[in-house]
Image (tube, rainbow, N blue to C red; front, side, top):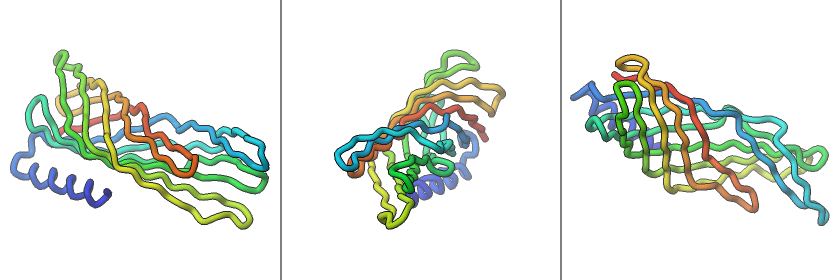
Length: 192
């Protein structure tokens, strides 16, 4: 999927050479990931919260096909991993990343405010490692599915906008462990 997103970004960059207006790029940040883990050991189910939380960051780039429609690609990942204490001496570390390619539709409310929605395809990856004596090897799971987003944007200047959005991708599941990649993100977008 990373090759797919990189190819899409290269295609967007190449198309911008012919028409530099309409190209945009940006970055966003989300609140630290929260989570709980439930596990059963010797018939007793235990639930624990995260002892270390990761902060998701994202980058994106797009090309405006018209004032309403754009094609966008992006990548977001946890900075580090979210950790959970398991049995004494064992710890689970999980990290999640997502790459996407989507069509973006924009509804202009005023000169400064707009609403937008995105729909496309995304691939999520969850990597899991358990540390401790005789711990099993780390594993990862991938899933390709629907990517959706809705948000609002405020134009600060001709080429700079702040945006707040809610992103959704399919849940990642592996042997009773579920990773959600839904998130709110605050970002900045730069037009060229």
